[in-house]
Length: 607
Image 1 (cartoon, one colour):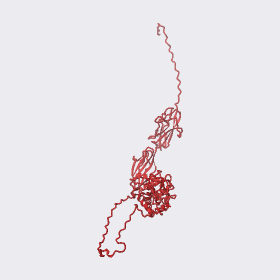
Image 2: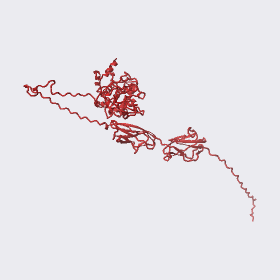
Image 3: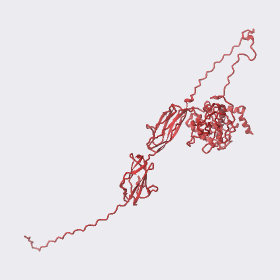
Image 4: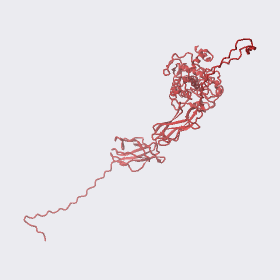
């Protein structure tokens, strides 16, 4: 029964004293807001609020002025305010925020505080918008990645009670190729999401149905035009840029103030769904700076009320009276007001930075990238914006540089809003690096592109000689093995080559005996992975040694790119030669010993 009474009070908030007191207390708070969601599984109602702006089209609003939930916070507020970092897992579901939804709001606040600290975005503002737009993503019905399932869609904006917005995305986001619909937990229309979509959960997609992506997009959108959300005027302007309805502003503010006074985390899927939304009274031509307006005092009437003045009253002494005529009051000069600064036209305000069609960034080491990084700047209305300086920077260890030798370059956008960086020249080190584009002052916008440098390749490799490679056991091969690598018949310089002793031509089984290389410590190794061809594509292998196992072995060389060659190595003992038989020695004739002569006898020579 009490809940029924509270619901009736909420529906009559604009006419009852209780709700008026709540709204009056809340108008001092500061926070922006979002739109109403029609859940694909019963989370919305086509008879939702917001008809006061239906005839105005989207009028630049993030949600296209789609319907929104008008439920007001409970009249009983949380007992004690608590810090946003220490919220208990207790309390009713009406005041609680589902865990994933709350985490997304806080993450968005931290991210924006880093990239745009002057905005001072509070997460409670995102919570207020999320409550009004989708009932905190239909009570936390999201998957483990924070994506609403099923997706949340507003009614078709076909001009029948709502704005008329024809299809802008081919149905990619909203499944409607005729009219646009507000999409996701924060209810962005596709055209706005195309400019403001974010990838906050790092999955490589900008998904309006993901609460992390949508919350960050909403935060950045609310901070546009260098707003400071700690200022009431900027806060109101931000909320109205989301949905141009003063009643929408009051509803969002009420939830913002409610969450500021304290809330708590509840498990996903246990949140309270909003009641069927009602339609607020029409608001003709909402002010861009809503607030309490002062009704001018009526001008004093020159005559007394009722009847005509007496005939003689207009002339002095006409009635014989000696009373002097009272002098009219001297009007006080008006107090001059300081001139109101003229806001920068949206057409001159930097709104967003987007990819202008940059394709995959890949190149071989030492070669130029075929693709160039290109971005497009848009103004606050989404139109291309010229004369915006964009700084491109290379980050990584591949040695890649822009043409001209720099890692940073600044380019100004042209008439079509695009800025294209100079061509990239890949370094010699294979690997990944990033190119970052940054534009804007005060609240810079950043885009990051992933790029890859692949190693040099060869499609063929062959030995340069044909001499048999033979070594004796325990010796080294006398001839150096030389090969040449080519790519498309041209010398392939700087190509990595792997050399492996194998048992089969396909290299499926490594060999653990036979020929081997030596490492720096003179330890035998049978695989080398640090080989590279020279400027002519030629590779001369280190010395090869033979162990004591004779036989024919295979050396397989494989290049980056898949080219290979198999070379035979033979370990063989040298053939033994039979020793030659020695020739018989000739015997010299014996010399006859001279005859001895008898003592005292003298030999007489013959005559």
